[in-house]
Amino acid sequence: MTIREGQLVLADGSVFEGELIGADAPGGIATGEVVFNTALSGYQEIITDPSYAGQIITFTYPHIGNYGVNDTDAESRSAFCRGVVVRDLARRASNHRSEGHLESLLRHRGIPGIAGIDTRRLTRVIRDAGAMPGAFGDASEADLRAAAEAEPGTDGVDLVAQVTTADPYTVGEGDRLIVAYDFGIKTTIVRHLAGLGRVEVVPASTPAADVLARQPDGVFLSNGPGDPEVVGYGVDNIAALVGRVPIFGICLGHQLLGLALGAGAVKLPFGHHGGNHPVKNLLTDTIEITSQNHNFAVDADTLSTLGREVRMTHVNLNDGVCEGLEVVGERCFSVQHHPEAGPGPHDSRYLFAQFDELMSAGKVSA
Image 1 (cartoon, rainbow, N blue to C red):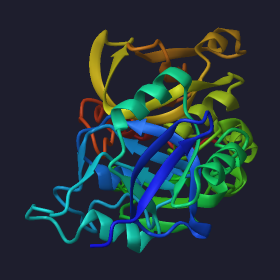
Image 2: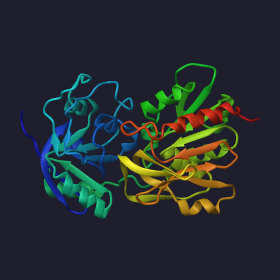
Image 3: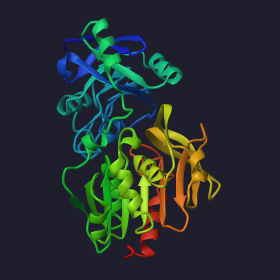
Image 4: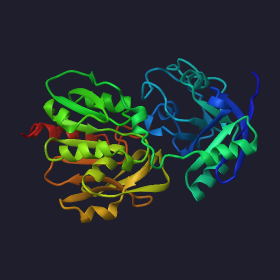
């Protein structure tokens, strides 16, 4: 195998040497906002999660690709991340479910990558300085730094429009109808919802009136990438649905619900990306280990200023970030973490049962 030497250069000038893997980057340089994920497994689910649109994923676990990939574990129809960074790419895949090698997936999906990177040092840089733009490829260090400095990152960019479905589609069957907004929805989430009823997945810009015309038993607000404050169409539609139909939101859907209620949003220094974040359920006084993937969050300090009763239901024990909220009396709740957990623990899967109970209490009002 021919070794393709390359470099990763961050916008602050930090340089990391490595070996190029995966697909060739357009123009020979891959750019994006560099983040790190601390999960020990689930690399395929992470790479195919649309929430990583616009980002370069650094895997902190050193050995990636050892159990291969398969069609079943893909979380979307494609992959929207800008690239992957690993310490050691396994040259062989050994698992009874494996249908191919990780590098084959990267090439097939058009995702460039770089291996042999000192990911411990890279993670420390991002942890201390925050997520920042970066660029990698076989170009000169000067060209890579210029590309990194020119990369806009994820602030102020509508990445949802890049990942949402173009047309509605239905999964599952039954008399109960759940309308799911696709802001970057994961396959595992759709599978969990399909266990509760017939799911119609609709584009992110679908008007609230069109959703209500379907007479749904419930509305789901999906995960997705980027800055919630630029998804104004989503905020407006959600505001028109609150109080009219049971609502459950996850990740970006949680942030958009918060904005629809009048709360603010903040960008975290380096985000939450991993499968072991401790979250406290403030309603039951219990601790859950959760899967996380987000760079923005609802501003908890603004919840008390809203005109309706909104309470924080979950909090991240690492840094106090709002991990859940509930609109009291409106059959409406959301969480920042991922109860479907692909990959990750299953401590929070009870939230789908909670949505089930809300839908059983009544349908859309006139």
